[in-house]
Length: 256
Ligand SMILES: C[S@@+](CC[C@H](N)C(=O)[O-])C[C@H]1O[C@@H](n2cnc3c(N)ncnc32)[C@H](O)[C@@H]1O
Image 1 (cartoon, rainbow, N blue to C red):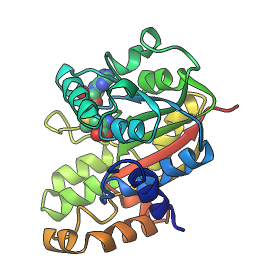
Image 2: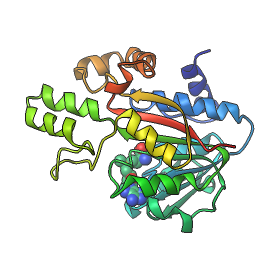
Image 3: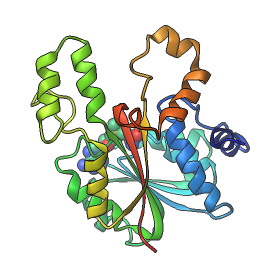
Image 4: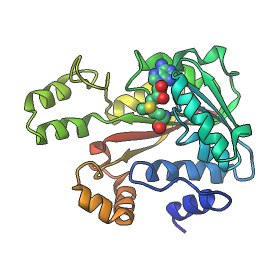
């Protein structure tokens, strides 16, 4: 049985699970391994910048308790509605707060799994956020961190003729194209891993997410979704494909 099959079973068994899209399949595969490893346990999950609950709600549906800390009241309101509609309101807690101020919001060493997806590229400074998300982890607990990749953005700008922007992105220490860029920074795998290590985490796996999805014509991506998901999964851990992905997924652990 493949990881993908297990994800579909885990999330489809009792509930309607998340659709396995090119954006999410690789991440769910990695998370499913961790859930399998802790099978039978009700995990305490913290989703930092969890937004409207795209990960939090399925994790609650799988039987875990999830606290979402997010800066946006609107996102948290949508999360609360989504959790109620999914019948898991009692297992999802919405907390408004800042990612670098988790200490006042959640107990230290209380979480089995911390998620921080698509957040480090938009916050003022990623270092205090990573430090803050490591602290609530129990020894042996895991962190799932998704960040924007720099290389894909350089290629995308170049392929649409914006060579000056591509050059700026490639050269900028923070992987940003400047004040008009929608993201404050992008990451290379080594830089993202170093950030997590500096917070005391051991990086166990790095995958590329959306190696191909953003490059394909919509007719191909929409016409062959299953094949695309399989190909994304096949390429996610392999060099050089991983490093060209639109996003990098790092799975790390607080040493026991
Ligand atoms: C791109 S969304 C990602 C949402 C979710 N993690 C996902 O993957 O679908 C970024 C989220 O981070 C939240 N956010 C941005 N800056 C934050 C901060 N400093 N502290 C907490 N949340 C923040 C935003 O409100 C938004 O919900």
